[in-house]
Amino acid sequence: MKILSWNVNGLRAVHKKGFIDWLKKESPDALCLQETKCLENQVPEEVAQLKGYSFDICPAEKKGYSGVATLSRLKPQRIDRGFDSPRFDSEGRVLVYAYPNFTLFNIYFPNGKKNAERLNFKMDFYNELLEVIEKYRARGEDKIIICGDVNTAHQDIDLARPKENRKVSGFLPQECAWINQLLDNGFIDTFREFEKGPSHYSWWDQLTRARERNVGWRIDYFFISKNLRPRLKKAFILPEVMGSDHCPVGIEIE
Image 1 (cartoon, rainbow, N blue to C red):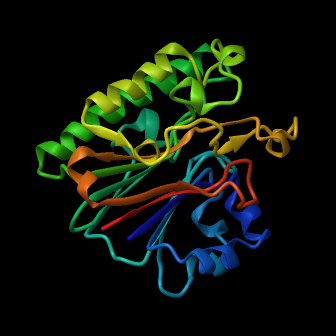
Image 2 (image 1 turned 180 degrees about the vertical axis):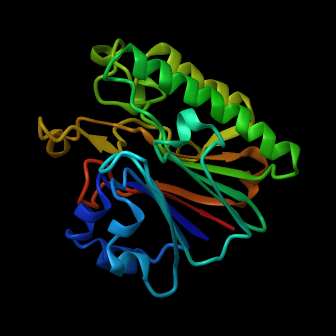
Image 3 (image 1 turned 90 degrees about the vertical axis):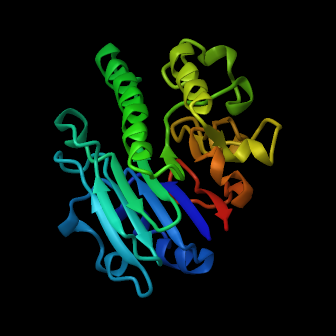
């Protein structure tokens, strides 16, 4: 099963840039999208009615902001939207597909760069996810995949200029420490199971044309629970795919 994740920076915008052709070529079994920036009635019909896929969206209450959506060939047994928390769920950041053999979290994690209030919101969101995971585990859903734009680079090798960004949200010590906490809580960074080296990124600043120079950040991830590791066959980044300031990332799992 091939699962892809992509922060599209606007579903309507990427749709105009060959999204459907790309999707048909890649032919994933599931595709998780973040920062869709549209309400349900604004989704391009070609996307919502794509043959062979079911489509669900969890939009933000604020128009043109945030939002996640999932396309899936395999029908989920259950779909959960959000954390069941009014504070977080109004921003449309979480869409969960419960499949027979695992549970897939599609998440657009908050950005903390704006101010201290948003950084606190981001850290609270991070910690809320850990509590939500335990609730799923408690009811027997212990095979978990978490994917999406995490908005944090984990280690020095995950961004081109770590020293210059150590005091910038997205690479603050407490943000990196949370990823460590997630890993300590029984999860694996799938990409690092196959690639240990630097210079592999999933986001580039558009204003400085950083993508042309590969001055980027790896902030889009697939984390899986350790009990899924024997089934993980591949993890990858697709930096050649254009259309957003992010590129898709993916895994192949049995």
